[in-house]
Image (cartoon, rainbow, N blue to C red):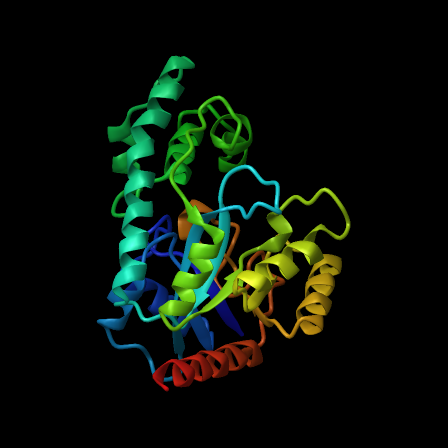
Length: 292
């Protein structure tokens, strides 16, 4: 099994990159990718330490982009990037802008919660988050600890999600820029968890994929804990029809979302090694093309 969607303390995960490597090796995963939100620091940290020979490691990132004009969606639109050069200066500059925007909106979210009569401080959230890059999931976690919400999911649905009373928007790069920046850094851009997107028609996903391919999309995250078997089958057919790479992963965040376990999601995720091998071949092809 493999897991190509894992978050570390460089974004909103609770395990350090070295701990992710150790846990992946201990449970027998064959390949992983660390895909932190708008950050390559987890990948860089992992590469500075020994990786067990039996565990294949692929660089990755998850970029928060603005939805393209042909997809009506509130909030962020997530693009995964695999096989990227973690030192690419243009990509790193873009990601730094996104991280700064994320950091700047945290006080505004806290201020909105305070105006709603909720007693919470940024210092409390920072302490609870520890070494993680502070964001909405950590605010949600403190709200659960205080009894304001029954779960992190409820905190988002009632308070922190797009259009809710404590929501604060943030800067995003365009979807086209996200796709191109991944490709320019030698990587393969993949649409993350399409099952979490809301489309107005049955053909919504197919139309979205066609439009994204025109912008440079190369893959689809087919295997994901929130995807039903029927939706997974739909994604597989769509990927085969358009010759898109298929990827999959648990979206593991550690203790922040404890019911999701690395490699297996809620227990039934099974992403085959062949998908990693296909992805690596495409990355190598892209690298040869850019070297000419």
